[in-house]
Image 1 (cartoon, rainbow, N blue to C red):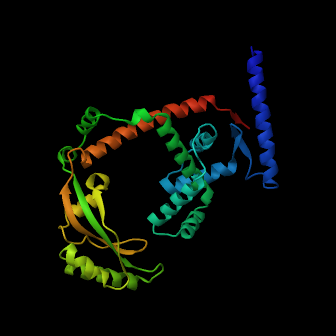
Image 2: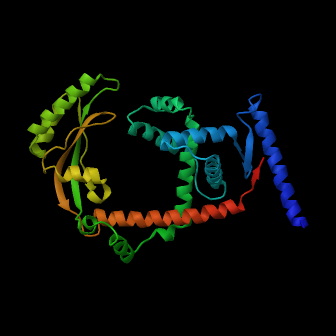
Image 3: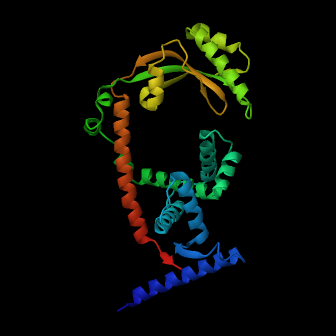
Length: 317
């Protein structure tokens, strides 16, 4: 038998759902099918259009077709995450800028301008807001989990060594290095023909042959046309991806790495020095810490999301 408290709660949910649904229907105008409300999550609607968009995005990103329920569950979690700035005392004022920067970085990683990236999404029927919403939700979620469970992400040496023992023998015994690098860029204008790109690559290869040490090689590079020699940087092997570590380990000190095509042109790195890192800063230990962090983050994330979902007003329409 339903008691008065249960009845009051049920009524509040119904009123809230009806109010939000009416607002969404009003905003949708005559396009009722595209904006049909499927459910309301703490006052925020999920529509058939949202489900269609997210399905297309997942298909594009994973080349797999999710079930309708998987998509709805993901959208429910996303709505809950997007609502968290109202609950926690942290600044969300720069979030939109951060989201735009992350979106633009995604475009650069696939060697496209943001405009070209948006056009590529459009070909798959995906609006940029679908991806940006997902990015924003994960940014909020990362801040919240790190802040709420900060002490859980501090690992002592014994925990790191125990995790390290489970890893590959090369990672357990490998040494770390600190590399001093000078990035050198042969500028290639966006939209240049392939012949121009290959011409600049040959110029980079010619410099690589002549480059025998940083003292003489850097001034030599500076006199070439449309060249940018960037400031010196120091990078630890523990901070670098394995592929880049392998390239640097195969490059002699005082020489250049193989030229690589980037969004700005043809880039090489002068390896000016290579020194062994301290014993605590090795790729193996960094990887072990990252694995511990990932495991703890996933555990806390799963636990807290389950708690938030149990507290949420999730009302099917």
